[in-house]
Length: 467
Image 1: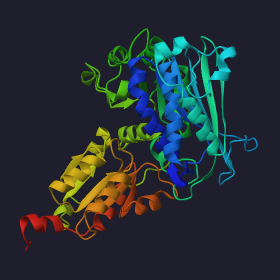
Image 2: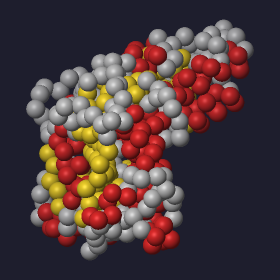
Image 3: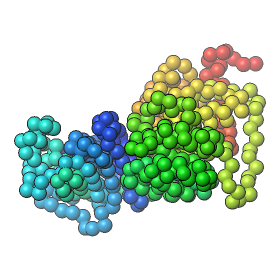
Image 4: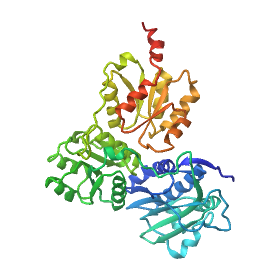
């Protein structure tokens, strides 16, 4: 077997793999989470398919052998020497990443650990009868990690849980950006906002707390919905609350209903973390600002937060700048047929409102696949393309559009991304996009991007020449 050696987005690889096991995890009532340590490159060079194969095997096993509790994937940098085994191959790059998959499952007896990485071998016959499987997955995964210049090992305690570790040797990808994902402009929108996090799972609270702190927010967390409710009823100052749906003493909907007795939706917006992003029965009446899926994805949480706070005043820490006035006649002066590709409902409303104030109407696609299908039905002058979307992301959608239509016949594609960091513009342009604006959308950036789009080509085709 030969490995590929190509740059890829590490977070995208991890989130895509977790999505494949999420349904089974939530069916069993398990919490699924991941953590990427600071300093781990956003992009690395290697074989994304084989890395995903290892992760999927370990995560699938963890979910299979866990009846209650959690499965957590963590990625960190290995500060030690590059591990070597007889099977390890020399890989380009001198950075070692350590992946761990920890579960709270049945565990493995010490005397049977040596069977784990043998082909066609399982812990015992009863395991094969109850859970199925060939016993090949771990042997293949260990071999793949060795081919990537690393190794694999396991720690386990019976009836407590198991942690699989594996390392790979790699190097940061300059194309996708080796810098850790730090979102610029976050301080202007989220800095100083007070956020309440209510989740009975300790791991989820730690992950959320660290994430929002990194964006300048001030978190307060509780495992107890009743304790959180007391803080709210006491009048403690809060700007937003993030609630887990499934909690033992009071679920997210019950807690939201109690909160609404004291705080209206505009006074305290609520975000609900729910299984596979489902809108729970009765949730719409409680005025949730957003519904998000576990495992927690920082890009989606960030999009939701900035969408909620966009346009709301921040506590005065600096003199407010004069907002740019929108020209209500801009659409007449510079006619454009616009498609907005954005999966987040709050961000959709914000973008549509800004465009409407300039006289534009926009069609909406909820993901990249819908965007491509919309272009097959009719012509547009401009696609405002979110980069992070389910089904098909904005980068892949842009590649598909460029394959199907020559540049002169396709619309201009303007990327919208929360990851405003060095290298992102280059990544978008490499995917065939024409321009780039940051999220939350700034009026002056949007107006400038619209001005750069040649006006009215699609309308001339549909409506005939204009006088």
